Amino acid sequence: MGKKASLHLITTINKRFSSLTVIGPPIQLSGERIKVLCKCDCGVERYVRCLDLVHNNTKSCGCLNRDTLLQRNTKHGLCNTNTYITWCAMKSRCLNFNNQDFRHYGGRGITICREWLKFENFIRDMGEAPSTKHTIDRINNYGNYQPDNCRWATRKEQANNLRKNILLTHNGETKTLQEWSAVSGINSETISHRIKTGWTINDAITTQVKTNEIKLPKGVRYDDKKYQARIGLNNKRISLGYFDTVAEASEAYIKKAKELYGDTYKKTNQLQPPLQPASHYKQSQTN
Image (tube, rainbow, N blue to C red; front, side, top):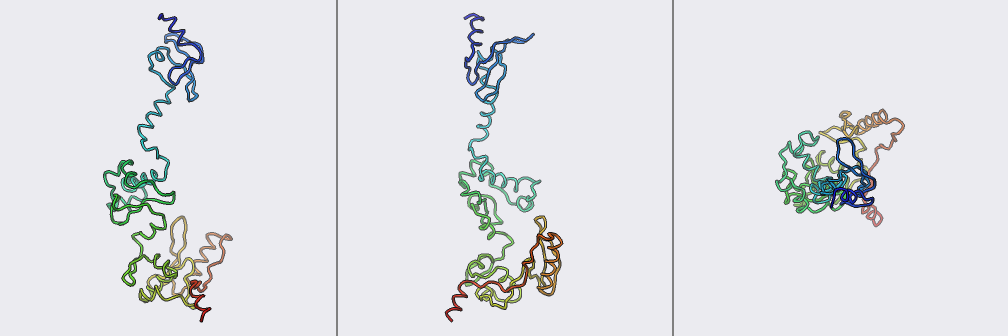
């Protein structure tokens, strides 16, 4: 086939070459080879050298190369999922010195098992996160990220596994303060306050709240025989001082809250007896 016939075949309108379709007549600028206007399947239009079309050197506007590279680097297809985001965050906490949480993980010597440095191995062992509310949790907070020490857990479930949690043993069973609170129906702050003021763990957990037993108001906690007032600001808790009475600590909290939040602060911090569990009211009706 002669050059003219070959050129005519190439420049035929609507002629397809891989992902490219000829849509315009050929042109030849000074010092350049003959080109023809093509439209890619992705919608992009560009001039392509005729020889590149003949020899199949150019198959698209460049989008095929991008797609091939993306497929090569993303074998799992889970880049935008909660599972993949969790995996990336795990690596950053343990391996990235610039991560704000590095001191709590990599800085403490927490590492990731070698196999889990590849996402495919991680998802093989852990499976996908059950929901967007689940994230990875280390069963032993002093252990590493590895198959036998990790599970998917919600924030609430993880809260019961924090290093700072208080563990209480009652009748040979050990639970966190929050878990005993859920079992007994007694507010966790009340149980904590009782123990700090000399109650036994058994009494603190099993003795139902009396009407004259005051629940600590918002912004007040009992600490070392004093009542501390504190308030949240910019995701941090700021101490407002230590006081001899609950009323003084509560007043300090209310004053600071009004100062920070003005009219948006509602005075709902009155000292009131806590609500009794449902079983208490049922018992009272039968007596």
